[in-house]
Every structure is written in structure tokens, then in C-alpha cells.
Image (tube, rainbow, N blue to C red; front, side, top):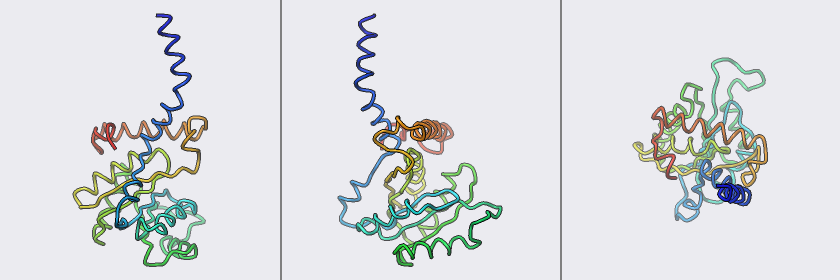
Length: 215
């Protein structure tokens, strides 16, 4: 028994980093290889946001467009029923003007505001993909921050399937390094929190149990 415990401790010491790295990749699946291998660009890149839209994620979306992997950038943000001080009254037009100043053309931009109604990610995906299906969108790259990727991807994937919209995911990391997330407090919090939320969505039936087993 002692030998087994020592052997287990040694394995944990030498292999915990690869295990945690793979765990991170599980919660943040990246389908961009498929986009790179395809001969045609995806119709849109969908950028998820909260109440505010940061510049860095927008620039990530712009790189996707400039690389020829997507034709338009769809910026999604959550709207509140109450007025937020410091935010433009017509936030959609404000965002469009700001993105044009960064170098995007008006025909490359679409802004969609969604309510923060429970379940938030599922509500968001239904509204966004319903709007895009009316524009005859058939493929989308979903840009998601950190370990929220797997849950968001599977929600969009499930909602998009009956609408004939193919969805792939592409995570981005701003608050912590994806190769060393376990060494940073923000990384640990994001991993644990999003892991719990993923299980909650599976338990409630918002996404299938196979989302825990496959990409």
C-alpha cells in the first residue's frame, strides 16, 4: 500500500501539469483548425460580451476577419432594463461607430443586444442565432473568453442545428494564461466556476450529456 501511495504521489508531482493543461483544453475547445482547413470563410464571427464591450476582444474578432476566416463580426452584449450611467443611450450605434474607427466597414458589423434572462447563455443563443438565420447565416465562429467556451459552444451548437447553422468555437484568454491557468487566481476561479455551470446546464437539460464527453 505504501509503495502505491508513493508511486501515486510521484505520478501526481510529475504529471499534474499535463493533466491540468488538458482539463483546460476540455473547457476551452478550439475549432479554428477546421476553419483554417476550409476553402470558404465562415459567414460570421460571433463575439460574446457582458454589459460592456472591451476593445481587445473586438480586435481578436477583427483578426479573424482580416485572415479571411469570417466575413462579418457580430458583437453581442447584454442589455439592462435600467439605464447605466456612462453608457451611451443608443449603445448599438455607439459600438458601430467605435468599431468603424478601428478599421471595420459598416457592412462587416452587426450588433445584437440580448436581455439577461435566465438561463442567460441559452437565451442569448436563441436570440442571436434566430436573428442571424434571417440573414441566411449558415456558419459561425463563436469567440468566447476563457473556460466559458465549452458551455457556450454547446448551447450555440444545439440552438444552431435546427436552424441549419454550423458553429465552431474559438476561445481567447485575457485575464490569465491558458497554458498556466492553475497558477493564477483568475484562472482557478474561472475553471471551477465554469465547470460547475457546465454541469448545471447538463443537469437542467439545456445541453446534452455528450457535451461532457465529446467536442
